[in-house]
Length: 380
View: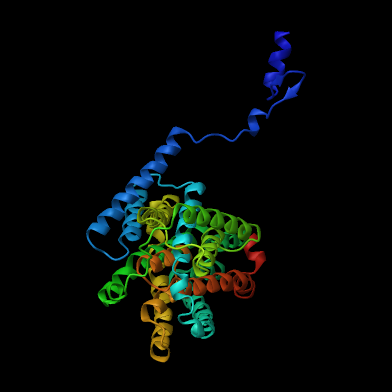
């Protein structure tokens, strides 16, 4: 009898009353171990400390920039900085709800300029990609496929998958893309502060906190919409789903007020920590070997974007700060978080970064096919 029970247990299932089998042990999700929990807590503590330090120093965008730089520095120092998907998704939903709360005031603003500026953004993205690619090939000897993928701004997950498929330099591409995002997230608030724009804008965030019913409705609608967009494979579904739900509820007047300040601050610190943790996946030796390529590629991208920003500032009535953040070749979540904390029109910025994400996702495979290495060379 004992031998039979032992055989059943060894097979991975346990019988209970008339042979009813429970879930095999191999199918039960493993709980996070102590080391993983410690890594997450350390990341959050380091990010919060950096964000609070920058906020105390009255730096614009301090919560994001401080969290990003402190977590990034810790990652480069060898600490295993990481945030699990559950926390990442929660942060993106909170950010989306906060952005959607601004829609009722800013939805109509600049609407007529969208087609023109989005068209120019597509052209700027095209020129930036080829300009950065040319620089990486001529100055650093990169192959065409890796150079084109590294020079393409935005849509990092799609770019990485395409790099793996085409046999490109995944590590080099990751370094170039990460350096671009890190510099932009840290430098844009300082640029707007130096020009006096970051402090000139009136506070755009709602000061009233939504009622308990309103907060419940916001959370439920945000998660439900995000899940629907995720099923439809919509880009950045957690953030944009929450933003769309919040925008509808606020725009129709069904919900008044926004999230408590402490929740909004958690979202901003979380975005900064998430960006900084990217360095945990890059070896220091890899970073050193590609940092010159990353800085040079970033300079090309900024030069191209600056030309288009200057043209739009002189020919349209769109605010300079809105154009700068909308045309910044950085990560969509980071730029929208900056739009929130710097009181910049999130609808204008969101529309442009989403358009670039779609443009890059659709056109990059074709560009690689036409201008990258022949597939036979990749396979070799």
